[in-house]
Length: 304
Image 1 (cartoon, rainbow, N blue to C red):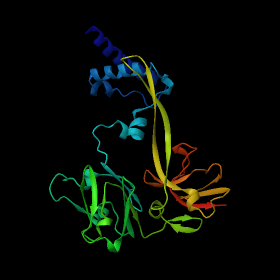
Image 2: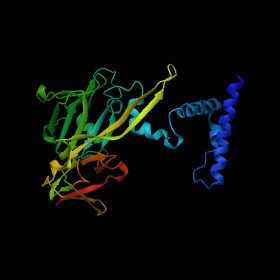
Image 3: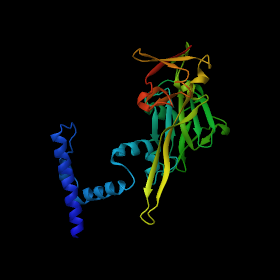
């Protein structure tokens, strides 16, 4: 019991002490005083225990914030997340990203639950388009043009996810386990060596995955004291630049963003680069650089 209160006292002193030091050295973000007011002392004690355990394997200079893991590797950590719980909504859409299955079919446990595809598109801000492509987890895909997409083209529950069916289309065009919905719009705001196109058109062609920020992680077992290691990373999927430019053997690649700024890269710097939709923007992903150095809001690529 005395040990428990000792840890609580240490946690409080750490919060107060570090805050005081931060203020004394002019830190712009001192420790918030409301920590003590808003969090139970047991929680602060548990955090102190956790930090102490981490120091058995890590140097304090190597610590990162919770955001690093939760934003980049959240799917690895979250429990009870179903395999088909989200669908990637991409291409020529206002807000590319993930759409949760429960947002598409909130009453999936009720009989006859369905949502017309055109209603989903409208909900996502897509008013006019040329086609919709749906890809499944097993690699299959179906493309339906706007004139062939009737109000009877329905999204319905399938296991943890959704499936597509339309009595007006041949059954071979029905698809289960949808993981991506790619929209091709009417407009072509992207220039690739003078050829007008769009991300929707590019994404239904050849794509590629590249790994991001691979990190070694470790944990010391409380049972046998052994430190075991693993490697965690994430992927981004996009269109290989060498596939879409006019001259795959280019010596220079110039990217222009929406503000008119141009960035020129050598062939070596641009090697393995992809055009991706990253955080809602058309982005030139460069495997040799961190994400903060990627070129965002790209509207044109030119090669020499």
